[in-house]
Each structure stands twice: as structure tokens, then as C-alpha cells.
Image (cartoon, rainbow over all chains, first blue to last red; front, side):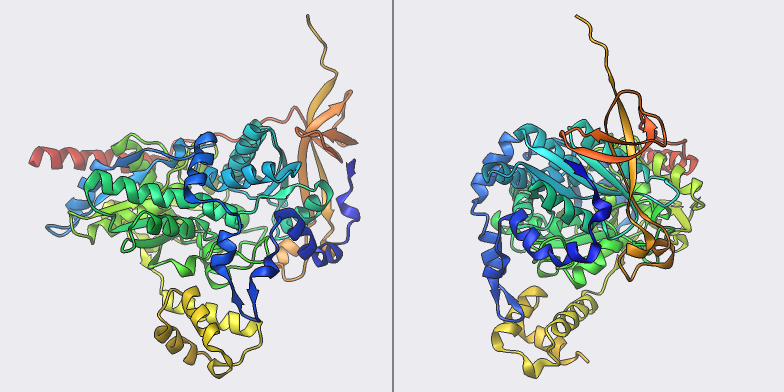
Length: 475
Length: 103
């Protein structure tokens, strides 16, 4: 069979997406629709039919989970030096690089690939430029499943982002066929075409399988911190992009009996760069965990490769902050030189935020950074900063405000320059609510049923009262 | 026993969508260029760069495209030393040493 993609008209393929995705995920999403607006989220999350204990067992067989929980004593000491007396929470990190394939994404891939094998699919496809590709490829290799990974890698000059080239290399090392494309949202078109052509399982990042796989991470974080310190973590900082990491971690923390642990999302600030722009593509130094994914996904989570996204970060986030590229590179260097851990850099987005957040928390409290990722050629800060310079981005030492995505990366002059910016979740919620109402043609609060308001309150992590307040303020 | 390898590992590329076939609502710079994909696989015989051939991928599928590279190297690296980071690390270590001496 020869692939002749160019002969398949774009519009026709896109029109068939509902049917293609239903076959490729094996979930009938329509079953969970309850009217024009409401979707049975809990029902969808229960659809895979695996208990937390079963997922732990499956992951153990796949060399996933039970990663080390490490206390970062030197970074904590440094943070305390800059904090007020009595302040400076203990910083711990969950060394997710120890999973097979080198990142927490193995948790997401493990259940998807397991399920695809059990359900008789001949292979799996994942559309991702991140660590998830290597994770799916590694799991597929273990289960004898064929694997196809689709990545956005090159600009129109044929210049590839080194971090994504490394991730593609890893996929090929695990035996996957890798499609590497130029910049554009049409990756979804190829995804649909190849799903149709191969009959493979869509190992989407946004199915309940993927999110359920991350629950074990939140569970381990809660249980291990309780065992190590005798108390639940005060807060867990989660690098946030598509929302699966936030969602799965929060669900796992609840299962571990940590309902009061704050879930804080953190993204690299890439505001101003257009994620669909051929020119901007190689002017960013982070390929995931950034605002280019995080913001649109918060405001409209269902913009994905499945009909309804199981990753719904707005349901779980207590706070959301951004950090600049320079601060993440700085903390990556400090993690290596003070703690002896060469990791990331993308996984260190939450670490940069945590370093500042810890300074604002009492010293007896515990703050957890819930992931690391393996580092290597292409991924390492020296690789990314060399690439940035080659693409006209200035790299300097300087305070946070000097950072301009695509123009200047300012490595902090000292640890005091590591700051975060709080994102107003109220504004994000308002934008989400406005979008949801517009999509179903509801003009205002008076047209909503009681069930719909309750649903929107759950979707925005608000009480019904507070949700009503936001809804009544919508134009 | 030795065997002679009669196939080469190559990278092929092909236009997936011409600019006119691409989705609407793209930034101008992206809209103006084709949507292009690359795949690697085994070519039978002796391929030449620029030739259109079919390759067999790592999972046994066949994909047709123009030969871009033969024995394609993973060219990504660790880059060059970044003095700003070297300085940042040294400063933090020095500060930590001072804090330890003060204790």
C-alpha cells in the first residue's frame, strides 16, 4: 500500500472526522452528551473501565511509575535565603525521567497502548511534537504494537527545532514510523488520513485513557509526601500545556486523600508568538508547557483530536502562573549544579515557578514539582540557547522584564530575578463561559437551565453562586 | 555468515497540501508555503537524491516521496557553551558556600 496523501481533499477528510475518530478511539462520545451544553464528564472518565489499582498494575508491567521523590535541599536553602524569616517551603521533585522513555508522558501512553492491544487494534498513532511520541513508541515496542508518530518539526526553510528532532530520534529508536511536517494545524488532517488508512488506535493525549494514566502520578505524589513528611503537600506545581497533566495530577491527589493540596499550573510565557506562524516557529525555545497551548486549551478545551477532551484543567486549577524562558533555563542550570540532576528543560517550567512560590510559603510546608524529563542533545539548555542565537534571538543576563518571546531571553542576574506572573483565572473563566454559550447559541443567563449552570460551575471550579456572578457579567 | 545489505536508509519528503489547498485562517507566512512532510525508511537498490521512490518504514508501511537525504544523520547536538549559564551556576554555588559557612 502506497501513501498518496496529496490526492485526498482536505475538506472531505475533515468532514469525516467524527466517524474516523469514533472508530479510532472506540468510545461513543455521543453517549455522554446531555443536551446542548452539558456533557457527563464523570461518565466519560469512567468509560475506560480501569480502577486506579489496575492502572498501577498495568504501569508496573510497562516500567512506568514509582519514580523517586527527591528533596531539593540546596534549592530550598537558596530559596529560604531570599525569603522572609520563617518562610521557604521544602521543595521536592518527582523524578519522572525515571519512567521508561524518560518522562511522565509514559503514564499517559501506558494505558492507551495497553488498551489498543487488548481491543485488537493493529497499531497506534499519536500526533505530538513532545515526549509523548517517545512514550507511545516505547510502550508500543513493549507490546509488539506498530506505532506511527506525527510531529511538527520544520519551518519552510527546512530548519528543524532541535528539541523536536531529538524527540523524533527517540521515536525511531523505539521502532516507530515518524512523520515530520512543516508548521501548520493541518497535522490533524494527516492524523485523520492515517487513522483511516491504517485502522490504528488514536492514542490521543486527550482521551480518558491518557488522563487516567496520570492519576497515578498525583496519587504517588500525595502518598509519598505524606509518608516522608507526615503531612500532605501544601501545593503541587504542574507544568501546564494541554491540560492532561493538571487534570490527572489533581484527580490522583484527591484519590490520595489530599483534597486541600493546591494545584498550581505553570507555563512558559510565549505570549506574542503565533503558534501557527512559519516565521515564529523557530523563535521559541520551548516546544511544550507554554502559553501557546495552555491559554487556548483553558478557554476552549475541546479544540482537540477527540470530540470531547478528558483533560479539563479549568475544573482543577487553584492558581495559574507563567514564568519566562530565561528563568526556566536558569533553574535548569541550578538543578544541575546545586542538586546534581541534569533534566529538562521543559519539565523545569514548574520548578522555576516553585522556586519563587516556595519563598512565599511557611518553611514547615511542602511544595512539590511533580515532573522531570530526560535531557539530551537538542533538549539541553546549551542546545536551545545556541539555536535561539542562530535564529536571531538575543541571550543576555537581566531581570525578568527584559524577556521578550522571540526577541530576548534574559537569564536572571541572580535568584531574586526568578519571578512568576499570576494569571487571572477569573478572566480565563469568563472567556471560557462566553465561548461555551456562544457555541450553543445561548444569549444569556436567563436562557440557561439549572443543570446547565451547575455544569458550568463544575467546569470552572466555582460554586454555583460565583459562577452565576460571572455568567451575569457576560456581555 | 556475512550478507551484503542491498537497501539504504533514506529520508523522503513530499508536499501534503499546496498553499491553495491549505486550511483558511493561517498567518500569511504559513499560508504562502506548502505543507510538507518527511518520512524515513528503506529504499531498494541505490537511491539518488531528488529521485521519487517508495520506501519501507520501520513498521513495514510504504511511503512515496522525493529522496532528500541518504543515510540521514541526526545532526542535533548540545550546542555551544553558554557563558551566561556557566556564570549563573558558579554564582549560585558561591552563594550556597557562603550560606553554609554562615551556619
